[in-house]
Length: 187
Ligand code: HEC
Image (cartoon, rainbow, N blue to C red; front, side):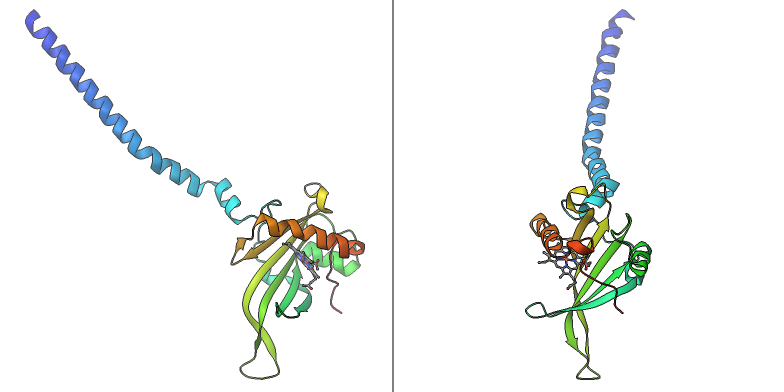
């Protein structure tokens, strides 16, 4: 009886070590997967990938259905057709001439390459989309830039921080009297 005791203990010890090693292997195998799932699907990560640098502005949902404020055209070398559109808060403010624009105002500038109509030579129509530019009014969050947050996107991706540093300077210098917004409601 007593002579078999150390043998059992030894076998038990070996089993415990084997189990511990197995557990360690399983944990080490799973950890990278768990980390990558957390990083890929966590809300913070998705926001960062689509938001503009500096301002954290994103392309607003459903903007393609928004109302037109005015079209615009850009001469060469860009040669673009543009349309500035706005959400309900923006349109309401424009209609009564409310300045400054209230918090929650969102303005979007869509832009396309110019294209000649295939059906009618003198007609110019939108070609491929080039950029989507967004201005969001939040007077507290963006107090340092006239209450406006800026975002410029190409193929749905924000452009770099250097480009975002130029937005405020131009809008501030040239459109100050209109709450830093260039576009007037088209008659
Ligand atoms: C050098 C001047 C300049 C710079 C820099 C500039 N903009 Fe503008 N922006 C304009 C002008 C001019 C308009 C009027 C519409 C047009 O002619 O395209 C405009 C219009 C807009 C509009 C529509 C509302 C409005 O003010 O009329 C948005 C949105 C916008 N810009 C976003 C941006 C963003 C985002 C950036 C930075 C990435 C930026 N802009 C940088 C000149 C500028």
